[in-house]
Length: 57
Image (cartoon, rainbow, N blue to C red; front, side):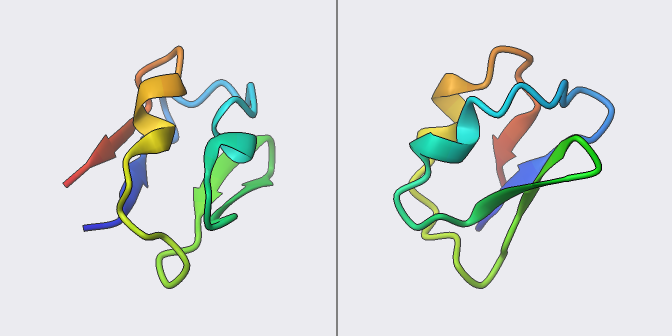
């Protein structure tokens, strides 16, 4: 399953953006957004999120 971002927890720090090998994470309205078609389910973004806003379902 693709990464899921909790908009309530996301602080917009952008730590996850450079960590994504498939460039599936972009910023929109100061929050991270995952392109579900581009996400390769690697989980790299989960480990770098300081606010624990990203999960893999």
